[in-house]
Image (cartoon, rainbow, N blue to C red):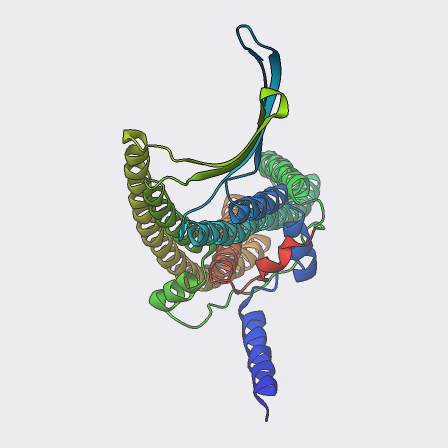
Length: 415
């Protein structure tokens, strides 16, 4: 087997593993990728990348340009003729050895940082997408559960009214059933409002995405512990890499400002015509600035900036590590919580069913039936919240580790 075939096989296995680990209630990968590519935050980062590329070209060209100097004068000689004289000079500064190489490295570091900022912007947009997507999923699940609860209570209210007409139930039971139904309808209305708000926010931020479907995906925690996921995330984290590139560029700028304490010379070629053209002058000029305290202060200031950026990089590494570790704990805890809450919801539902049968046999009152149904409802809501929260935490783990909706941001320069 060739190396290329082996790499293709390995890539296929990795993709398959990621697909199995990713929750099934995520949006379509192609639609999500298109939505992220079209996000204003990502487009702004791409514009800043083009700015960095232009800055790289400027640094490569250097700070010096040709300058043209023209002069004209009238010479008056006492007792003699008057003369018209003129001169022309062309001048250009020259970068001292080593400065051009530093400028090229500074420009390249700026472009690399801008590339990572594109990835960081895309990652932040993806985080926002996940949050809005799962908020919409949760609100839809709540609407579905409350709608089922309303249907059950409507059936219960009809049954109680029939029994009241038949003389088998007191009128107070009818009021009790109607009150429970009215409360459930109000809760359904509030859940529908939350769902409409969540969908509206998702559509406004990511109009390319459809509304989430009714997919009850069971959470499955991917392999590895917190340390594994921290290591995977730090391997290719755009925010951390951008901080590293910024610190590297700052260190190069310190060297560049230190080199500017040796000013670049300005060379000139001068040609003059004097005494009406009787005298022609051709000469060279050399100008060198005398460095002062300003250049030394600029170098010291840039050194302090480089130190600050290095500390910012260290702080980002600590914060990202803590975020990933906490999110892994959240994911693992939510998966276990969902398992237990799902069992509790099933038990509560069975209890509600048995209580309803006991009520039909006259063994318990309507209060016990309504209480059992309310308990079963709350258990279902808690289980759904844990399920969706677990899937969101798992998706966040994959996203932060560059295993969800990942692409080569260096391809984003096409415009």
